[in-house]
Length: 101
Image (cartoon, rainbow, N blue to C red):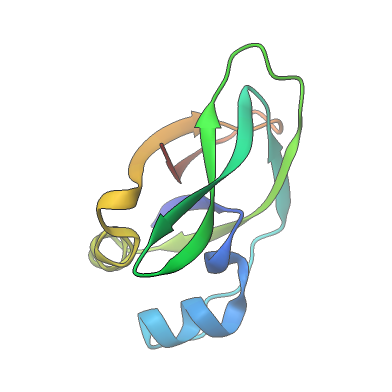
């Protein structure tokens, strides 16, 4: 299973459950630093996005979910070209995938 740090629409359980066709429970909360929150626009809507900013002292709250590699591909398709997926270090010392810019 792959850990994913979610902070926006994927933090909404109904969204991720429908997308992955199963109950995807949060494995708790965590935080990241070195990023800033912003907004990205696509399909006539706005979405939250984090952008790497090594000078930022902001802590961004999120949740950890675990998904299979196949489900990770579904999340990649859902996030589309507006986001990139990369591994990050969490405040807890764990690592997880995150969708950012």
